Image (cartoon, rainbow, N blue to C red; front, side, top):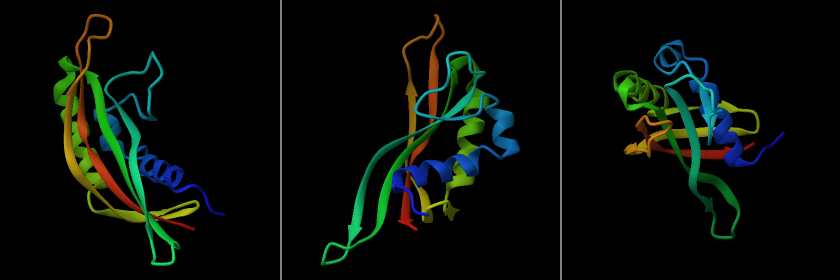
Length: 141
């Protein structure tokens, strides 16, 4: 059964990150796509699709997709040590990784760019995001 490549990427990232005890010790709130629920413990991990490009043959047959995901640890700036530890663990888990997921094969995953973003205060507390932009090469199966 095949699935959309972007969905396969989300499924693979989630499967890699959500079962790692070391990551969940630093980010006890868990792993979410796009947004975490309002009462989520912090820090937590957010993943979001950023962009993508089909890799095609000369006759326009799609071989695979080259997709970019933002994966970051998020939490109050007062928890910077845990946020940074979670971001480092994300990089260990996703850096130069590959694997399979229902409907897709991830040929490679690597970080293209680090990210560090401070958000507007939430309930009077400054929040920080630390992570990276990860490039996944995905073949639909």
